[in-house]
Image (cartoon, each protein chain N blue to C red):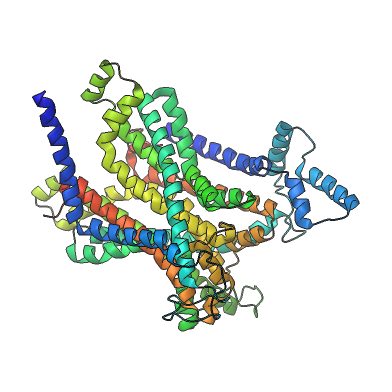
Length: 293
Length: 331
């Protein structure tokens, strides 16, 4: 019984250690601060602003001012309102699309790595095929056929095509972990396969999984922005990509309306860049070798 | 080596089959009747002419035979080089329309991919274990990899084209000129080509630099580097060995990144209205030209597969372990 207690406290101690280093790592702190600040803006901003971002509220093509923080569009829509709504849909696409691809990648990777043999051959083949397939081109063809394009359907098709690299990495890691002694021991106790995977193998690559989740999130946001920009964005919502598409379509470049196309791109760059930097910081947290003391 | 290539070719063959099957299946699997949708799009009110059009489309898609036969017919047409007729550029066949746009995309893609790979790798190798360069290069690299392709293209067009006025912001060449093999035309072509190229080059640069930096650091920590250093080998020699080992994963990475870069090229072309596949794609979408859309996808898939295969060949040439059938080349 006492051994169990010691184990328990050790585990808590380890967790606190990671948290301790994570909060003191400037990269993690800065990255998370940017991501969270924009998330809060996207989540709560729409409550204070107009519900319909496409409403014609002000004078046309006005530069940023005290009243219209990011100026107005060619049609007199408030760019800031659109921006805040766009942030919301970007985060939604990132969470949903990244989440779906994460789940698929994990399922395929664990199954292939743990089962091995024929199952692995087939799954590995599928993974490699999807990996080579130029995702954006396929996404364009599929979404151009969709009758009703929404943020959710976009996230789903992005998720279906962006999992393979996670599956590959998870498979490789599972291969090495599946032959460890403690996994054999767990197998001897008669645990089910999925229990062993979840309880014994997954915790040992938790840091890696967290980081790949972050990368998938950022990747889904970039993919969605590209689709939106080509004109395959959600029909009923405003996103950062459709803002850029609109600004290009109504020649904001030639009219010098920089306030229309700079904020959406900048927001995507900030979100994704901050995620990458958080990732580097997390790498330092989980891998003591990389810590700068 | 034989096994390595057999595996690779099997994967590429399967990918091609799946890409074609996606092309075949998507219009047929989507909810609703594609023919009915096309009819509503054309908004034909007259019942008689609507029936005539329905018959025409049914025949065009070959929808009046069973599904498996449609599938084989689809493949048959494909091997005859028949990708259908473009609606947007009626009555040109899709294959010609795509082939006309292809040189522009290739002229953008190949130099930007290769150059960014070389320059990025060189920069990354220099930045590794170099405090001063590292602190400057790393944040810039991360920002660059996070930039959406089209946004950087827009910014470059705005700064270089509108504010400074140095470069044109739209088209592949001036409308005043007719394509000809003359000096003025070539200069004009390069003038229009530069900004889209620069945009693609810059975005890809960061990723390569970061990847190379991490790989070189990893190699410098390995036993052979420490051993060489202990022997008193000059720093440059150790770094050279580290670099040669670190290049290998980057070659694989080049093949894997290709899909993303092609996507980037598509949106960059849209920004600059560059007459390549990207602009064609935009036209195909806005005019609901599905044959053209599928033709473009097919060309992109073939291009990516060919390039992947080339990367595999280069990998074998560079890494002797794959040639001897040892570890190294992963399928």
